[in-house]
Image 1: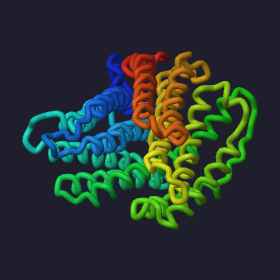
Image 2: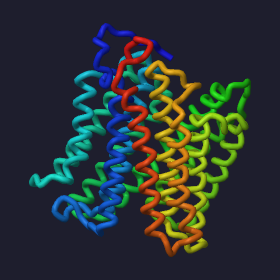
Image 3: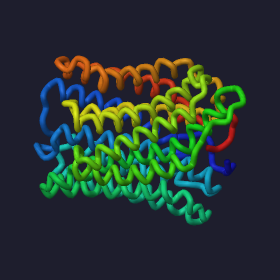
Image 4: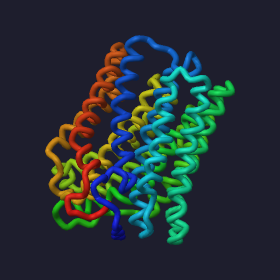
Amino acid sequence: MATIETSKDYRFALLHLGFRLFFLLGTVFSVLAISAWFWFYYQGTQFLDNGNFPIILWHAHEMVFGYSMAVAVGFLLTAVRNWTGHQTLRGYGLLLLGLSWLIARIMPFTDLPGALIIMALFDLLFDVTACVALLYPLVRAKQWKQLGIWSTLLLVTTSNALFYIGLIWGHPGLTRIGLFSGLYLIIALIMLMGQRIIPFFIERGVGYPVVLDVRPWLNVSSMILMMVFIVAVVWDPISRITVWVAIALAILQVLQMVGWYTSGIWRKPLLWSLYLAYGWIFIGFTLTALTHWIPINPMLGIHAFAYGGVGMMTIGMMARVSLGHTGRNIFSPPAALNWMFFSLLLGAIVRVIIPIIAPMQYRMWIEVSQGLWIIAFVAFVVVYAPMLIKPRIDGRYG
């Protein structure tokens, strides 16, 4: 880990590192966006932006390219600084990046002419600027091995551009390709980062010596198959190649998790939350394959990835990174974490598993899961906002 000190004034800490601003923006936005989605769903609202933006597309787009990208960029701006030893975006540059993201989120709710085009411009400005800001220190430090992660973020940017092109110019096929490729690329990014950090965190976090069975061939084969899966599932979600690649990926995820397992994780919320989040990716692949043979709502597999995988992984990562990078003890996390993670885990079960058992109450399960998401992220904001805003407790910059 690189240590980068600076003579900057420490009193306003929100703009010191990317995780501070974007974790706070992302979590507050997730509460507001899911609350709005709850209200729109309950009221039967169909469109935003004077009928130009279908509400179902708004919900899906904003959770993938709004919330998930905010968390990913915040995490990577912080991680790249550690990997390279070079300072990443901070101060006014970070503020401008955050404002471009925020303006894009607000635009659908305004009456401005061309609000959707303005949203697209600011959203893509955010994506492209983040990619450039991350590439610069990687190139300076010649960290070529990190370009796989950076390339995934660039592909997400491309997916976002396709979504807007399809939506603005009336090509539903492009909109669909952009949306689903973006979701599965976020899952690929989570898999790529999870393979690196989950076993690392477990070995150093359980409180006793343990050497996990980390097999590089599993990592490589998972990522190769994931690229095949993304192409296949976007082209035809129930094709034979989609189904068989999904089955192969489900098996590989199980093998990963078996190698990472040690009983001590259940005593550590910062560990079991990440471990179970990875398990939801396995469930996502399994449900995707089962829809080929069993009449299962395909949205259940998608929400296993999105609610369980993305939701639990991001909140678990934000909880740990925020503690470590504000100088706090990660081995003594806030007591509220267990309840926060349990709320989101229960929400994923209600959203994905319970509708298989009791499909007649599907609307109710959606509403309950929305409420549990809101509870979990409100708790995160209450517990972590002071940490993200205030300076490090050890007096260092960061």
